[in-house]
Image (cartoon, rainbow, N blue to C red):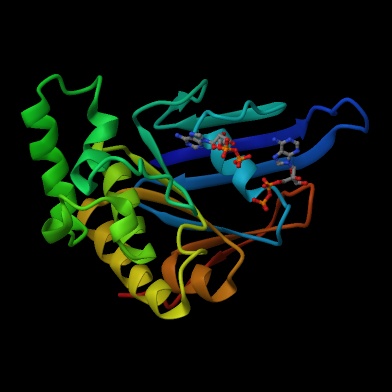
Length: 228
Ligand code: ADP
Ligand code: ADP
């Protein structure tokens, strides 16, 4: 079963006060199976982030359709969660408070929110740091918090926008292995944006290679030597 179905999706950003509209996506077709790990690979500006935000329901498409779990995407929803390159943690909240944040409005009891959040903080290996604030953590640890926060609402799909792009090379490698562990543990469907061929081949089962802007999928590659 496909978790994500993308058919003939086009996107053109409206013109500013001067200038003309920006074509960002030129007819993207893509299917991601449930539990799959797919990378979107392509040069800067080819529309990878636009497509990821469209799947998240944050950017309306100009044409075509996107379905998640058999339902047409019409806005944000709890079946999808986003992981940002720049983490986007709340600086005044603790690690536990950041992970509990998306559960507000979903789980009424604060104690229950914190119990759930603590499970995910543990999953990403940060139990000892649950009471720390983001600025006390390294970049890799901050992104662990970002991943735990995304998992906290138990989404079907994780949308990851160059999540390790701001980290040094050694931390990036550690986080890649960590992400594979979490993927296997949780069975989530992952769509992972990167412009690194190495990263795409190391992490994903399938790579969708984009053309330059306006992007479409030029080729899809099964990775035959996927990490066991
Ligand atoms: P990528 O993630 O592959 O680098 P993006 O999806 O960020 O590509 O951008 C694709 C194209 O759309 C680029 O030309 C970019 O400048 C343009 N674009 C992105 N966001 C906006 C926006 N909010 N308004 C206008 N143009 C945008
Ligand atoms: P920019 O990305 O231009 O620097 P901001 O720093 O104001 O803009 O961040 C807002 C951006 O983050 C918007 O492009 C918005 O679409 C995106 N955004 C906000 N919340 C989410 C979310 N839950 N999932 C995905 N994207 C989000």
